[in-house]
Image (cartoon, rainbow, N blue to C red; front, side, top):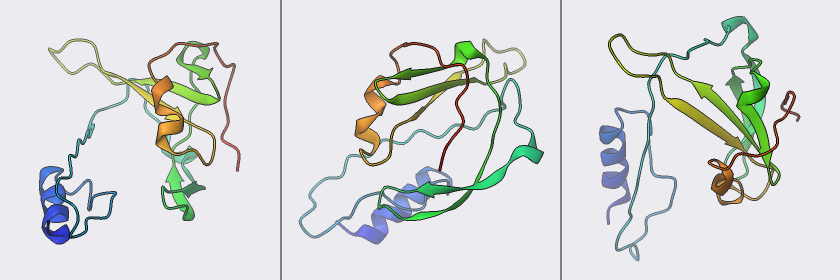
Length: 136
């Protein structure tokens, strides 16, 4: 499997939103099953641009760098914790003539365990948080 060709296909299929696969493809790779979800929508209650600021972000490889981060307050009913993960639900605006807007759940786990450490809890309701603020 040609890594450059696979990455080119990913860029094409995602309209450039994803530049490359988040895995290493070698001569030993026989199959790479990839699923991608991209969302382009308007938020029901937009973020205020003036509140966006650079915050440290750690990627899957452990590299830390500043990333422009949107910040907003959410109602108590839209944020909760589940076994150490924070879940925040944001609503998308209804499109003209369409049904209700999508609900997007952002799952934020503790540092270290990676996505598998927090994603199983995205669909599970739990105790509600009063307000969550990211900490360094």
